[in-house]
Length: 266
Ligand SMILES: Nc1ncnc2c1ncn2[C@@H]1O[C@H](COP(=O)(O)OP(=O)(O)O)[C@@H](O)[C@H]1O
Ligand SMILES: [Mg+2]
Image: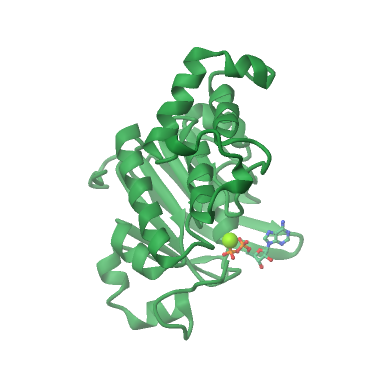
């Protein structure tokens, strides 16, 4: 993906002056950001900064208390992930959201079936559905899971579980994909492998933008076109990686006193 210059283009999606309160607590305060065609945007910030809340709001899972969320020109505030996926935005979750007893094939079949509006079919008929099965195999192929199609999810390595979670989001054929810590809980070697698979798959699938929450600053620096840093629910910075990593105050605000990574935080 190559970012399109922001000038005069409509954003693919944007949050406009979004605040989100939980009771009296303000998790997001007046947050605005946009994502343009071709962009890979990383959302960073310390634990509790509001990153997951922001992803939940821009993916229509949570309705903002104040403000607007627009996707391809439509107001999508609170429309919910199923409807939003139909419009072309899908997400993977921070906690791997897979059923341990289902195989990779079955897990992806459920996601593809939902896209093809074959919800309600029992697994037996999904298994006989050639169009659906061809699509399951295509998605497994791009995410490097083809050899694991008949493995049950609980038998997958942590890295493979992450890929399955990402594959489920890809199965919805999204134009935008949101990932909350796609590499959390895997070794640093596996993190790079997952990111490479993700970026290659996104390119192959025609995904127009990726937004990820990520703590590993090596990955953030390497893959992002732009970094949105949150601190206590506000946007501390929205800049290109070169500017971000040149600013020691910025880095320490985001990663505290720890060197380079925020491993273990969420
Ligand atoms: N459903 C909720 N109810 C109450 N407080 C919440 C809820 N979700 C998140 N919060 C609070 O909002 C703040 C931001 O949370 P979150 O967005 O998960 O942060 P991050 O992902 O950056 O670690 C935290 O203080 C968290 O406790
Ligand atoms: Mg989080």
